[in-house]
Amino acid sequence: MNNLSRFSYHRRRGIVWVCDVARSSAYLNSESAVAALEEYLPRLYVVANSITNAAGGEFIKWTGDGFMSWFETPLHRETEITAKFVARVAYDLTFLANVTSLGVKTESKFKLRHGIAYEHDALVMDITFQDGHASKDLLGRGVVLASRLASVNSTFPDIVTHGDLSEGISGVARLKKWRPSASELEKYFKGEKWGTNKLYVSAEAKPKKASPAKAVKQAEHALNCAEGKTPIDKARIKYMETFIATMCNGPTWGKDIIDEQARFIETDLKGNLEKLLSLIKNKTKPEEEKK
Image 1: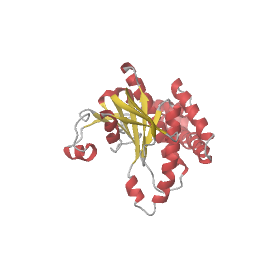
Image 2: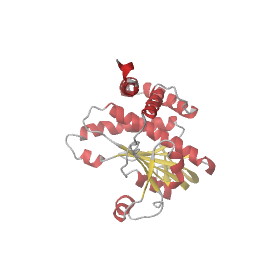
Image 3: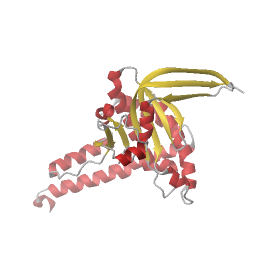
């Protein structure tokens, strides 16, 4: 029996953000981790839905161990700005998840991975059922690419993207070029080469020997960031305020993880930065001042 009441589709362009939990299959098959993962995944669904909507995107679907979100970008000239904003949202979600484990008490460190791609010609399908339930789905080469990229391991904030978006995203995460080997093409992309010639993964900065003065400057900048003394994009402030309010007015654990993140920034992050800054400054003082 056909229970569809409406089915429509149209073309759009925009940024596709796909996120998944690394090694989810292994955790599901682990007696020691499966219960924690089964608690973690529904919470990720709630948080992902909230943060996507707060950022002005559309939560398209849950994929079982992750999700797909869509940020429509009608004007091509806005692609770089939108990509940077989406990367910032992915960064914020990863930071929150890493610090709080979404309130799940577990020894397993669940890791989120993000694939961000530009879709030139998405086929957006809107489906409404007779019971009032509605769903939306996306089709397109960029959509598939984002899904594949989300399976690739990288370093914090665990973002993988392609050349069209790399310049914007590099304003949020340090990126390095990645050229998949033949085996990696088969493993991650099922042997398909489209979109794989200019890929970038987030990477840790190479340690450089800094002068004492530069080290002090870097530590002071990091401390100012932790204390909120550096300028923050208005769009980010607006979306974060909306997201925090949504989480605090939602399930009890929602407010708990927001409070835990705030405590971490204020106590652990800021406190350690203050100690580091004091240590650096003390080491750079003339010997007679230390006495």
